[in-house]
Image 1 (cartoon, rainbow, N blue to C red):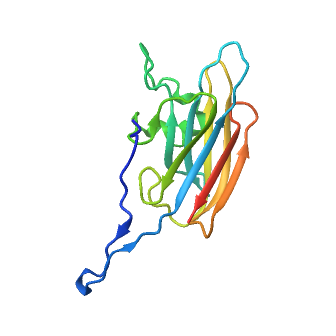
Image 2 (cartoon, one colour):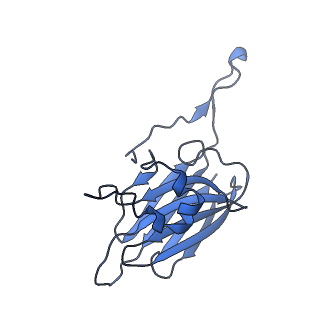
Length: 178
């Protein structure tokens, strides 16, 4: 289950034998903004959403966020996760849900932003290279959509990239800062 806050260390200690002081760590940050559009349909359900990172070969590197109906009563809350087909095939079926710090409840229409810091869970320590942020949404009595936003890590400067969905997702925006 997602924790409401986290405590992060911001420095590394070097040169204790020589009496050197702690130096600040590089703090690359990643912000992902996901827009869930308001749809005018007879039966609306908040979508399940998976947010993860893939390497250049298409292999899942890390799961950043999974939004699903964690409190589904009288039924297995993970029953509908396979509807997020791309995510499920790449990494979802190997996970035991809920994943601490990654799993969260479905979100209503609107813009939702999640932030991550290099070295902290769930982002961890990405190796330098080319990656894709992947966002997939699937909705009961609705459709399914997957968006991809390419990026380079580590950032050499601030980067912003986005992709626009056509039905189940609005704009997905990725902002990376060194």
